[in-house]
Structures are given as C-alpha cells and as structure tokens.
Amino acid sequence: MEQHQLLPHLFRTEYRKIIAVICKVFGIEHIEIAEDIVSDTFLLAAETWGQKGLPKNPTAWLYTVSKNKALDFLKHHKIFAQKISPEIKNTEPILYELAIDWSNKNINDSQLQMIFAICHPCISTEAQIGLALNILCGFGVDEIADAFLTNKETIYKRLTRAKEKLRIEKVKIDLPSQLEISNRLATVLTTLYLLFSEGYYSTSQNTTLRKDLCVEAMRLNLMLIEHPQTNIPEAVALLSLMCFHSSRFDARTNQDGEVILYENQDTNLWNNDLINKGEYYLNLASTGNKLSKYHLEAAIAFWHTNKKDTTEKWENILQLYNKLLQIEYSPIAALNRTYALSKANGKMEAIVEAEKINLLDNQFYHSLLANLYMEINEAKSLFHLQSALLLCKTLTEKNIIIKKIQAIEALKN
Image (cartoon, rainbow, N blue to C red):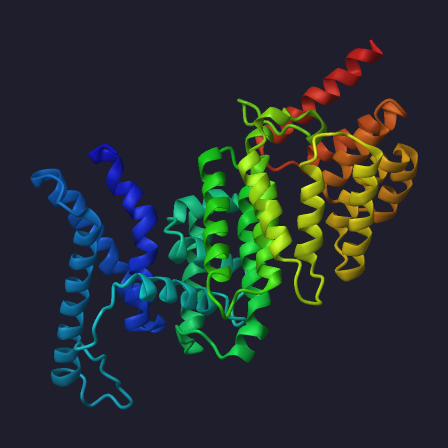
C-alpha cells in the first residue's frame, strides 16, 4: 500500500480501536477528550510521516503516541484537580497512573463494551446508529450525514445530544451482567441491523460509503458472536442475513447508480463466497428453541440467492414471510410479501393484498403496485408511478421512475 493511502486506511481500521480503549480508561463522560487525543494523534502522524517518512511499524507508532498523549492529559488533569478545583465538591480526579492496555483481548473487549454503552436505551435508535458509525466505525460527520441523507449540522447536534445524555446517565463502558446482556442484546442487534440497512438500502450515490456501512455492521456483528457471552443464535442468524444480502450488492445497481430490480439482476455478479458463508452461519444459528425474525429474514434471503425462478422457491419465501409477520408485523415486510405472492400465486392476488396495506405516503408501495399493474392496467400503473415520483428523495430515484413513465406514455402514442 502506498504511503498516501496508508494513513486513511489506518484511520478506518485503528481509530475505532484506539478510541474504545482510551474512552474505557477515561469514562464515557470524557469521550470528547478521548476523541481529541486520537484525532491529534492522526494529525501528528500526517505531519511527521510526511516529513520524516513512515515509521517501521505505523500501527504501533499510533498506539504509542496516543498512549503518551492520554497519559500527558491525565497528568495535567491531576494537577488541575489538585491546584485549581479542590474547592469543587464531588470532584473525582482521574488516576493518571492507570495503564493503557493495547493487547488484542483488551482492544476487542473495549469495542464490545462500547457497543453496549452506545446502545443504551436512554438514547434514541437514530442516535445509537450515529454514535456507532462515529465511534465504532470511524465515520466523520460528513459521511454520516451522507448515509442518513441529511445535513452535517443535524448529525452534529444529534451526536452531541447523545453523548451528553450518556454522560448524564453515567453510562459505564463495561460488559453488563449476563442478565443485563440478555436484556440489552436485542437493542444491540437492532442497531447493527439498522446500521447494515443504512448501507444496503441507502439511496446515497456514494457506493463506497454504502459498502463500508455494510462491512462495518458485519464486523461488529462478528465481534458479538466471537464472544462467548454474546454468541447467541439470533446474532449468528443476523450475520447470516448480512452475508446473503451482501452477496448481491454488486448486482443491485448499474454504472449510473440506478437500482436494478431483483428479477433483472445479473446473477453472475452475485458473490458465491458470501452466499456460502451465509449458509454456514444460518446452519450454525439453528440451535436453541427460539425462532427470531433474523432467522426468518436470513432464510428468505437464502432463497433469494437461489438463481432458479421456480414455484418452490417463491412458495417457500411466501411461507417464511407469513411466519415473519406473525412474529413481528411490519408494513414493509407485508409489502415485500406481496411481491413473493405475485410470483407464487399471480399478480391479481398480490394487488388485492398490496392495496390492503394502503401505504399511500410510501414510494415503494406505489412502485410495487406500478410494477404489479404493468401489463394489466397501464392507467393505474402510470398513476402509481406518478405518486412514487412525488415521494422520491433523490435524483437517481426520480430519473428511474421518469424513464418508466416515459416508456408507458410512448406505448400510448
């Protein structure tokens, strides 16, 4: 790897490790200080390496410098506590003698503990995802804003409020008790699920960013199942789901960033290695006596990696959706079910079921009905396309729908 590429790469891979370890030492109430120390370390690396060349071990250099900066701060903090603020009641000086452990075990444990701290129920789901991207994945405010399709000021305020809430609630960076893990793990899995979805279903045209979001969600998920206390079937099933979805990532968009419908995807672009990993984790998840939504969604995703368009395939997908909706009803899952229903039982039956859902303010609802009405009722297909166009959020989506509208109008003429 060339020198100009190395530092960005190390920032992506090492920032999250360093921030987790130092923040564990400082406590989450001092997270901004930890962030400043790590940012200063990378800034110094950019200046020093540019002038003097790369050190023999760049990663070790980053760890050493960040440790020294952290210890320097703690030393000065002790002086501050002793000389300036002894009159302030309830002041608890940070012990600058605390060691900073860079062992692989402590790095992994610190990241896992940070996951549970970030996924504390005192902050909103959106804030949890934002903090996960920021702290655990090393994403900047601009990148997070791109992922959420919003402006950086909104993201900055969201992250600031979330950190303040964690500080007020005095959330600890440690692995909760086994009972608390059981209670909180569902929230952690939901955060990782949504983090992955932000990448996989994102309408952002930044393809690299979208893939990075998925990769980071999978990395954090893998960290969960590698720890004995958090290795539960639901977590394994979620990783299986992510593998299956990621296997079709490259086939989902064309060179212009336009979404390619499932039925039109080039199956040669599907990643067989990820499909095999998905099957491996799905089999691994088939233990215990609990059937979670992640098991069912992974099974649905598995059948979608079957390249043959058979009745058996769609009947299996349909039955799995039926079970999924019984476990946890979701209008979007119900909408997805109607596509499987159209493949298994025909478009007319699917149209009846889709219209019952009545998601009039959802562009995907109108897009699906437009697709189902195609070749059955052009007027209704055109109506739903125009409705979807009004609800689009990005130029890419609008261009796709406009092309479909133009195609229908051309047939009329």
